[in-house]
Image (tube, rainbow, N blue to C red; front, side, top):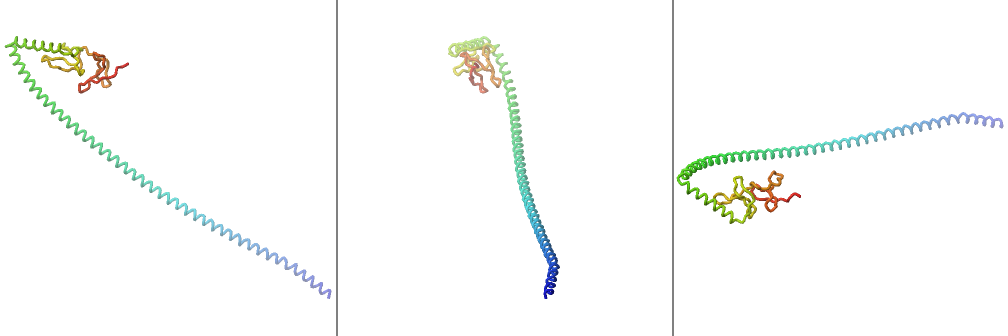
Length: 245
């Protein structure tokens, strides 16, 4: 009996020794299989995540490119519109300038034509006046020959009257004309001399006029008898200026 028990025990130990490696091998195979499965799942998951990331990046890139293209188109459209406006404005300015230049040229041409006509009229008038003056001169010469003494007396009388008027005048003598007539300064500061008829004839430049400088436009600056500095405007009026220190 004891021998049987011992034999069975040994047999059981032997069988256990044979079975345990097989079980361990099966466990390792299962672990390895699970690890490979987990690895495959992880790789598949990673691949899927990679694909998603690439798809998302692609979509983002496409959106960015579409937005950039749209922005570019808008910018080009805006630039084109601005360019068109600028060109239209330049064209309008050019047209206005040309119209103005044409108008100015036309006005200048009309003015020149008018001035030519006026000059022609004046020449005709001067010619007629000259003819009349010549005829009048011949007539006066004839009359002078006939009544030389009477004319001389009348002229002397006129000159005497002019001198008397000058004496009676309170205006101050400030110089003489080139032909020797006395120049006076009137109440309104104008300079004049008395002609043969006794009328006032106003002058600007005369002998004795003291010129002390010129304006920026080249007009003579005079010093009056009271020390004032002035020049004559285009209308013939006096314009006083400050004295240089």
